[in-house]
Image (cartoon, rainbow, N blue to C red; front, side, top):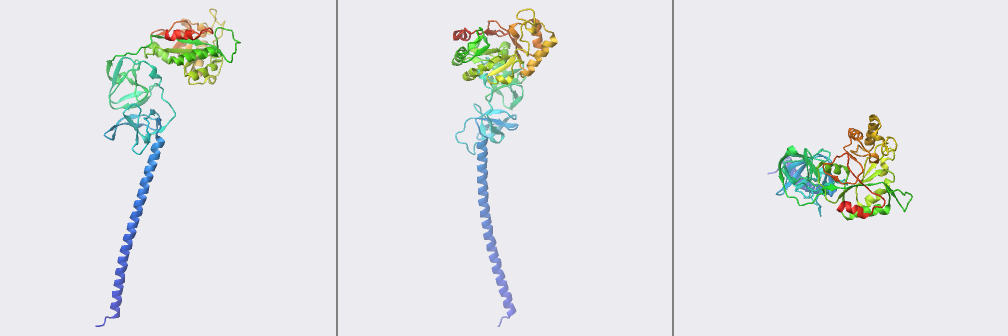
Length: 424
């Protein structure tokens, strides 16, 4: 029986269609497999890129000191998992433990001398430093435990961080309403109302019962002996004095620490001293010696005489010696400084201008060491919290903060004189 041509055509068409379908299925399957393989390659590449980018970010955000870029969480590591235990405010400096080889597992950085961590995403390296002067203070024989979720503040009483767990620490500063403690490598303050428990503990450290303040005037360099006054100093004298203080690890104070010592808010080591310089003439010549030996000093500047910028140094505090009242013969007694007899308004205007010029300093020094109840009251009214005079006695806790004595240093005084003041 013959197959009709039309049937043959239909069979051939069906056959070709089947072959096309089968081929299409194969090609589609092959293309799909190739596409999936390509996607797998892309995914692997993307994964590698993400890891590389994450590692780069981790490394770029690490430093021995970092600063928070936003309000961020504080963690502890429990069995490999990071648990939220508090918060840190933006722009807070933190010190990190060193990491020998940073890897992808370092997504949280550990803080120095603590069990706390911060996310690498929330910090950036910084060259800023934390004030560590408190490490020189002698701790009080008190240990306090702060409540859960207590707030901790910096020296300006701005909030720094909150920690959910109770914190126990020794007292370093004892203000009326705050305890100062060491936490996260810094001195922070917690309100006394946020403290649950206060315990007396033993303390074997010796502390100062009194500290000396010394007073220099004019330093002459390069063998210049043109000043024959007893309050002029050679660079050899200053160098020998400052070298002695540095070699003996004497803690050189600032005026706020002296005030806190007088109030009983801090305890100081036995080897402590306040270095002061009066007036401002040639005072910039002290700066290289302070920086050479890493010592701190306070310049009582007559602020109308010289620009503050002339004395720029992290080792030199600038305080007030009036704006323009360091003139003899204005008043009838003593050397006649005007602060003891000029009208109240004139004196207050001078004192307030001096404070404004000198970054609102709280420390003042009476011209020619001359003072009266009249001048002391005006110094208080102008906003000063402490004032220095002359005298040859040491500073003790509880003395009048507006009559702080200093030992004038004369050109003939050698290292033995400084040694007797500090070590005697």
